[in-house]
Image 1: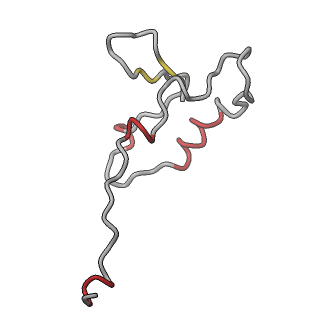
Image 2: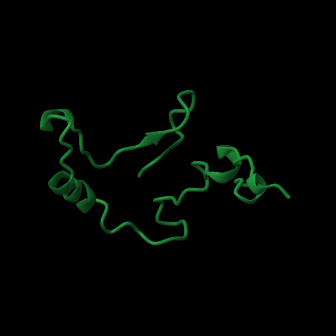
Length: 84
């Protein structure tokens, strides 16, 4: 065994994002009839973000903080969205 073999890092390829990250269909839903807990802090989150998020590299009027937003994953299917 050579000395360089002892300190070499394991060589493996990371899995592709399609295999490791959830799709929009696997994310929790906000429909009340589906299982899961309701998001009782949904309307408080933007206010908390507004009072604590202060990036120094952006002017305050260039930072958008909102609520009731929909995330669209596919521009061809505008009815397929999730709310954060």
